Length: 152
Image (cartoon, rainbow, N blue to C red):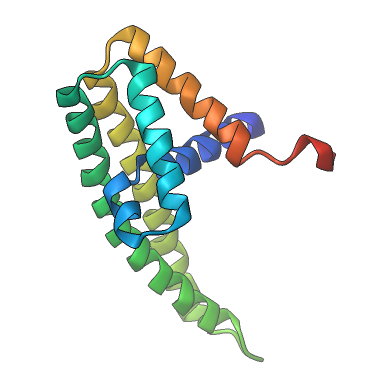
């Protein structure tokens, strides 16, 4: 069961990183943005997406990215409130009991948004493109999120 949870979390993190729209990064003019742009271009090429499909795919990512941005901001506020409630010599148990289920709900909504996004993206792709996309996500995760093998 722990393995399934690890892969679910890994997929969530991976999808978050992969599905941020390149335009947002380019607007920030950060070196990471140009690297992401190359990754996006590579993904479009690997999946052999037409310009129309690439635009649709990116629009799905942008839609969910915006919704997640709002959810994450709300979650961060709730987590900051929880930190305040926990800190100090006498934690505020009433506030803690109020905030814990709210934050768990926030997490669930975030995970559900990734699932919904993935489902919507898959409808845009052929089975071969779906397979290539999932393998590209796995590879990206291994290169960017997995603990370094040398650290073992």
